[in-house]
Picture 1: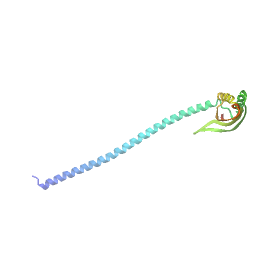
Picture 2: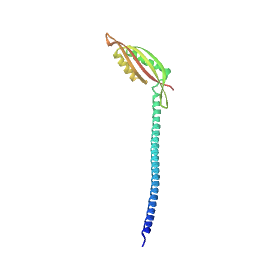
Picture 3: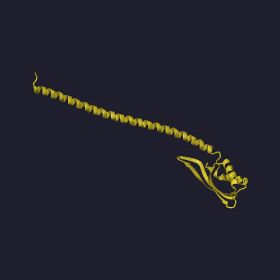
Picture 4: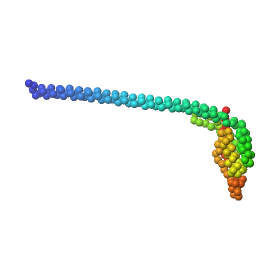
Length: 186
């Protein structure tokens, strides 16, 4: 039979072995958990990068398609665009419309201003013009309809009417039209 001291020694040795085994196992588990955490973070980072790469590829494809659309748009613009030196053609059209509507006019043109888009050089410029006219609101309405149906790319920015107090808009009215005509730069 074992004495009490021997039993205590055997018990303490077993307890010490179990404690060392538990401590070692805990260290192994802690180290493995750290490695798993690092691997998980690396996989998550790789997934994020793959997602961003895929989105970047989609964006690049979309931009390439947009540039093709822009090229065809710029090509389609060239048809009705006049050259800046041919602005007399636009002026003669305005004069023709004014004459057809029994209106007098005085047209002044500004200098061409190049149009730009981000990272794209457009072969288009705008030329501001001011047209001082005299007519009635009926003749102005017909005149504007004719400008709208003309083959030129143009925009009207503002129309100012100054009617006499006697007849109002039914009488002769001073009209000032400010606008732009778009011209080719090629």
